[in-house]
Length: 177
Image (cartoon, rainbow, N blue to C red; front, side, top):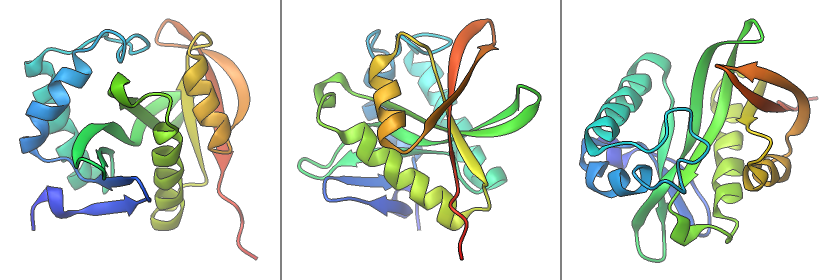
């Protein structure tokens, strides 16, 4: 079974699956787009940087059991971005798991980021023992703030994160009765 065959979630409009090395050609133009990467710490990526990014994601599947995932739009079966789990070794002094996402601007404004983020949230809480998940968002990134709020996340606090002011939004896993 290849990485592309590992589906972690499906919605009415999306397939969320493991990345594979073969996704480079589809992902590289998305991550090279300045609009997509406006709020990324390191900005737009070259094709070589996207290849390294995918290699790190594949390594995370092996070492952490999860990571960032390819998001496929069912209507045309195109890779339109990513959504998944990113591990931060220290935010405000503790390890955190973030739901992160980036999408092709041609697919913005349709609720797809929220749809993917909810599916990843549910997957993360069902499959792993995370007690909470966060999203780190620059205050000017209103669209991402809306996605976090629609994903059930609540504003927790502002923090200086790697030299940038970021808002921390969090959702806790519901306790089972």
